[in-house]
Length: 312
Ligand SMILES: [Fe+2]
Ligand SMILES: [Fe+2]
Image (tube, rainbow, N blue to C red; front, top):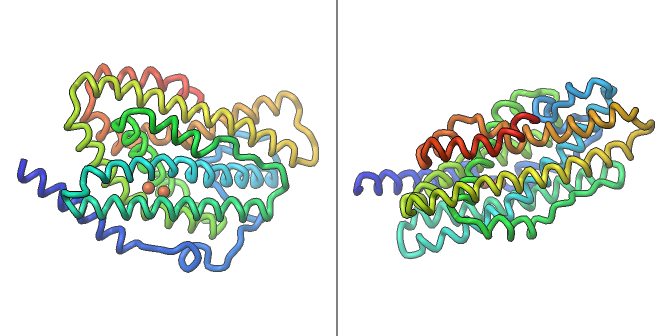
């Protein structure tokens, strides 16, 4: 027990050191006086899945990458609202305890507030250059209230899941794609640098909360986690429909009915890939989850996710 406590203390201290090492500011490091331009691709095709929409022209595919990239920034701004609230809440357990843990979580919270500001700036830059009519429909505060009504275990599980796939997207899809907007790429490089150390704090806090729970409470929290992933999917369905409507209204010509159906299905599949399916397969999340739940509970989650995974 003493050894575990000191290992965790060291890991929190490592989060603090990493947070100090990678510290950046929005204007000085990320934006640097630059603007986004409609000549550039925003979201890489491996995330936007535009290659599957073979009835679109090259210009239309680029515009689709911009619509999806704008939504990508807005979705992270949204999830960071509840992530930050939960992180602030769990700091209370450390106020009079491990001061490295407290500092790691306070810095984590501060960074999420900075990310929300960054994503508001990205939204404003997109609004400046893209055609009018884009709408981001989910309300960050409404979503946060619904998410925070669930158990802390499930919110930390979802947070860990999200931050792990943010890092995975950057490493697998964004960093390696030289065709992307340099500014858009930098936004997600700096974001990923913070997420890399947030994941360590997520894992530590999720485990700490888990270790204090009864098997019955964990079982109920598994249901909460399933409900939260379902709520994420509801958001994706809402925003995918809004983005297709915006995309079509911004196009010069209309789409054949058959292609409109494919577009709707393709954008929802891309969003389900980005925010759910691409994260489920990451071994780091599988290990963190698998260490806390029984095989039957794992199967319950897999069964609930199967319809989403099947159409991603
Ligand atoms: Fe973030
Ligand atoms: Fe984060």
